[in-house]
Image (tube, rainbow, N blue to C red):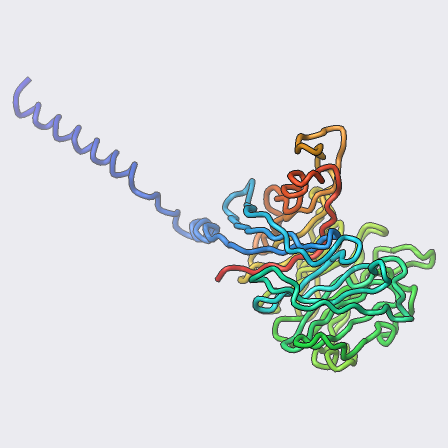
Length: 384
């Protein structure tokens, strides 16, 4: 072979090798156009400290990372812990609301002395700051649960919702927890016994409050109909109802229940948990934007959006979890209910991947792996 020809071949081979190595180490460029933009957007992750209320007298506390790009396991849970409020027989919980470093809460049932509780906890220390025991209202004796089940807040007030009959919204001063007002839904025209459950919360701008009522039919059973109302929040904080908008959504009798809810930070959308499904509504008109069945995951009890409103965390009670014995070993012949989180994609309008437990990890190591974890509402603090 001639020297010139050999030199050419060496040069070509070198170019090929250099090109290959360059492609191997270079980050692949996203495709041009909308598909590339979507792929880039999905790379954003969210981190949060999540507090999930339960019947055990505590909130499950978990460090959570949300990676929407992971289609199979988008929610990663670590550092699972508890924020203890009281004992299961005195402080079963359904809900909490965060304001800065303070977690406000209320109890779902009477304690051994017949009282229900409203309190607040310092999230820095995990210690209860104040715990106020209240005698049930004569109109709402709470002889059997439910008592307080949902809540909202303003700058100056914590406002838990009494879930049962007769249902009402209470107004407590945040600083002192002094009770200031009690506003019954009967003043909206709903007779006691015409509904099964009532929930509600505030918009982020402090202007409106949503209240939901799960209605009964003539047979006294839940008929699938849910009344959803927007009312004026400043008026409610002063003890008055002022209705702004109203709609009615219908699900399946006995299975669809309008539980807790959150507005997106810009208040444009309302994410509404509804037991066998999740609803997304227009935040002003209450027009239905999306509906997804959650029966494949469990019973949906709350739903909180990410700070940009693009995704949301659902709390579900998953009833097909394999129990564990006292040593933490699985017992496949027994199933229990576990508290789990599910991700909703508001842009794609779909539920994403597998759920992630926020209860069972502690229960099985504490020797309670053969008992159900009854989760309810969520209060998540997202990292900025």
